Length: 211
Image 1: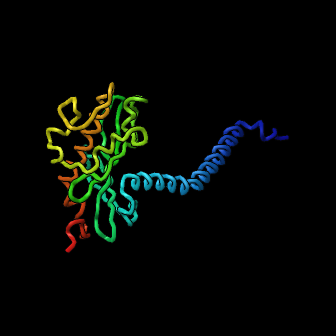
Image 2: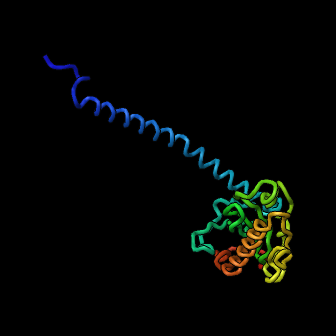
Image 3: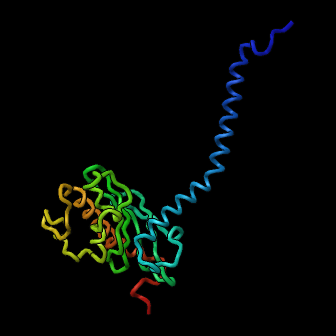
């Protein structure tokens, strides 16, 4: 008479394999079922960030689908979002970053086609609460001091915090943080100046060039 199957030496391995296959199938199904919802939530978050720094009615296109890829200042690929109204290219939006007191500070900036800042928002940072976190628009209006600025306004030598002889305020006890943001915004404007042709070179009408 044969021994019961559960006592067979191969039985535990087969059982474990079946359990692993079933678990993998369940996880794959769950991932597939939630992927669309996760991607939609991420897209909604990105869209909200983009529209937050643009004036109301500034763009009427889908910012998430009107993009291009360029190499950023570090050489890594950089996604550029383009804001249009009535088919006219009004501004471009992209991320820049700098090293603050607590690590990397990431900001999103919008620049109009004349090279002036439309708006800047810090999107990620690890700065000290109550000090460096004043770069957040919700905590302090300081970040709005870049609105309307350009590479020549102020002159290059004054694109710095006041402690370094520049035009921008610093925070008491947290100079490193605003210094990093000022440098990142200036770098973003330099990036725009160096790549303006590529940023607007798709045949679309650019603000100020409509005949």
